[in-house]
Image (tube, rainbow over all chains, first blue to last red; front, top):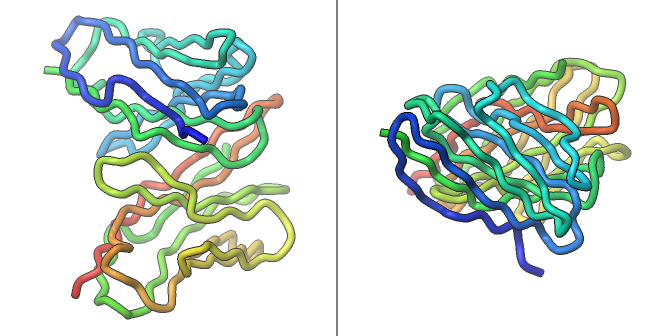
Amino acid sequence: KAGVTQTPRYLIKTRGQQVTLSCSPISGHRSVSWYQQTPGQGLQFLFEYFSETQRNKGNFPGRFSGRQFSNSRSEMNVSTLELGDSALYLCASRPGPGTGELFFGEGSRLTVL
Amino acid sequence: AQSVTQLDSQVPVFEEAPVELRCNYSSSVSVYLFWYVQYPNQGLQLLLKYLSGSTLVESINGFEAEFNKSQTSFHLRKPSVHISDTAEYFCAVSDRKGGSEKLVFGKGTKLTVNP
């Protein structure tokens, strides 16, 4: 069974640009969550999607948004990039919300210059 | 809201020595606890989990963790470490709200196993 797939793995952007990251969950998993990992703040929850609906949202500004498609694939978007948005963005999936463990992808490493 | 404290940011040990990585969580009526491991340039892999039942949980690669409700702890132990155990370890607690669930992570502990 294929794991969680994230694309792109690495990308470099400049301040003010926007970025879209993609996540394909494990087959059969319908819940997708996103986390941001930085050296200073550690791992922080961004949002969770299930059945194309945002179920939960972390404490991030409105520049961070996401969506989920009918095939459970998810994208997250960050607009008007700031230097502080440089991070590893991790996507995780599970069969449904509240079903325990998360299965993580390898992440998309974003560098903002 | 739930919170997790990992008491050591870095733990250096020699190969074949025992190790304990400490984790404390904020108290709650019921709690799910996890340990994840992250190798360089990779995502997080689940090491072990406590959902209910036996307070001692084990992983397939020799790690174990004990859920201690009175001390609100979930320390990770291994009796004899290998070079390949060098990685960052994250303790996490589930935070459930309105049918949704997120993981709240500690800041991580970098385990370095030296020959």
